[in-house]
Length: 316
Image 1 (cartoon, one colour):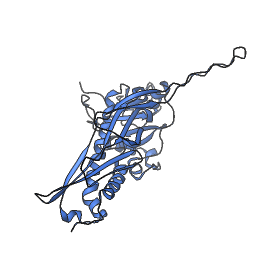
Image 2 (image 1 turned 30 degrees about the vertical axis):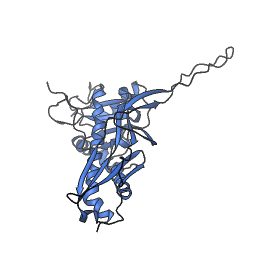
Image 3 (image 1 turned 45 degrees about the vertical axis):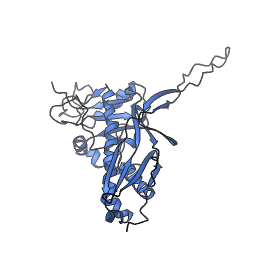
Image 4 (image 1 turned 90 degrees about the vertical axis):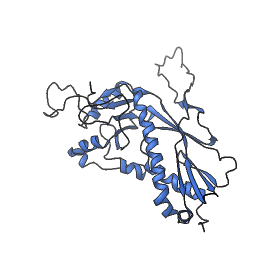
């Protein structure tokens, strides 16, 4: 007999925890979420951007110059609906939530987390500022004529990334850099990184963050950082196109999905801007249950000037 304690709500709760702890990019960009808004694929959401002001010199003879508070918005389409469904036997449904989570649910959620990170990283195609294709500086920092340009494999390339963002008046706080395994390996070989302390906001981010703030950027690693289409590279890295950015360069917009009409075993759960829908469907003909987990979100580049690509030289 199936375990009556293993409900869609329990599965959704465990699934949310796994998804939250396995995403990297989703926790580093601007987020927009409304728990009471149930969306559909193709819906368009307007994301608010902070108001901007100009400071003027006070003139006592004319007095203050009031400014209108005008908030601009960016339209984001909810164009991603990742789904992972699996046929579950009666015996598997009879497992307790920990066993079910470890054997079935956690791998399902890791697949959604990977897709979420890749969809956000696909926004790199909107970024035109590129650094990291300089010749390796074997002579060290004091090498004359180096002009402050570093290769992707030298972590001092972040100094150059900071310079690019500084010239665009990008805020100094909430700057992040997300790299792939090859770049992380090169940077970690440098003494300064081997002695750096790890820190982060969640277990997943603590595992992804491989050092303390460097040149104004918090560094993270993801295995989902394969290069965008159309940008092949020669030598190392062959597929990695790393990304240094401010939190407000990109946005992730998530909304809840509706319970399907007639669904008796279904639940919607949300936490920290993530929302999942879990639906059971029993097939009486084959006497088996399909467990389906999905979510709804949209991704958008808010300001490409607030990001810079770090990559090696492009192939001819």
